[in-house]
Image (cartoon, rainbow, N blue to C red):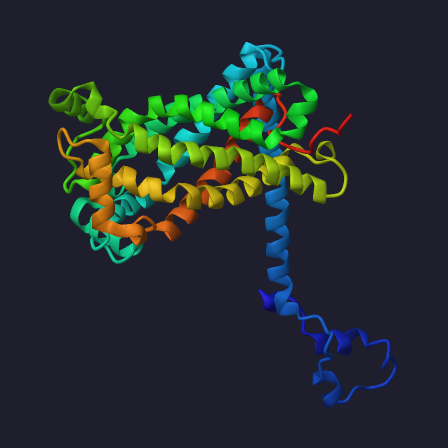
Length: 383
C-alpha cells in the first residue's frame, strides 16, 4: 500500500521544502531522512489500527445498548425488586446458579486431569500430557468427562450458596444489631457463608460422587449423570451418594468461608484505596473490581481447602464398601502422607482463582442486570 503515496523526494522536488524553497536540492539532501520523519509505508498500518479501535468502540456501544435494553425488559417483567425481599433472594439464587454452573463446567478439562492426578500422582506427568493422552484415547468427549454432573451439581450448589449467603448475612446482621454487625463484620461473613455452604453441599454431594467416579475410572464407569445416580443407588442405596459428604463439608465450608469473607474484605480495601467512593465508578468498573477481588480470594480458597479436596477425590474413588470414615481417612493418609495432601496445588490455584473471579463477576453482572447493587464495597461509617 506504500506505493499509493508519493515518495518524499518527489514531494520536495514538486513543492520544495520550507528550508530549501527557491534553490535546487542536492541528491544528498533528497535522500537523507531525519530521525523524526514520517514513514509513508506505515500509514496503512495506522489506518488499520484506528479502524479497529473505531469498530471496537462501536461494538462496545452496541453491546451496552443491547444489555441495557434487555435489562430494562427483565426488570419490567420481574417488577421492582426491594432489597432483602423474597424477590431479592430469588434473584441472588438464580445469579449463583448461573455463576457456578457455567464456570465449573468450563473448567471440566482442568478438573479432570487434576482429579486423576490426585487419585494417582503417577498417571500423568503434567496437564498437557494428560489432555494429550485422554484426547488420543477418548477423543474430545473424553477431555470433558464429568461435565454433566459438574453442571447440575454446581448449578444447584451455587444457587444454594449465594442465595442462602445473602439471607444469612442479613439475618445474622439484624440479630447482632448495626453496631455489632459493623464491628464484627468478618465474623458475620464467615458465619453466613459457613451456614450457606452447609446446605449447599447437601445439593452438591450426589453429583460430586458421580463426577469423581466418572473421572477416575478409565473408561468412565457411567454414561452420564442419571446413569451414575441409578447405578450407585442400586448397589449402595442413597447413602452411597452421600458417603463423601463429611469430607465435602471439610473441603467446601472452609473454602466458602474464605471465598466470601476474603472477597468482601478485599473489595472493601480496593474501594478504600481508589479515589472517590464505589458509587463514583461505572457498573462495568465495579464488576472489574469484583473479578480482581474474586481472583485473589480464590487463591486463598485453593490453599485452605486443598488437602480436603485431595481426600474427597481419594475417598470417592477408593473407599471400600462398609469401610468407616475414620478408617478410610487414616488408610489414605498412610498411603500418600502429608506431602500427598498438596498434590496438584499449583493447578488448583490457577483453576480456583480464575473460577472464583469469574463467578463473582458473573454474579454481580446478573445483579446489575436485575437492577441490584454489586456485592461488597466500603464499610458504612461508624456512628
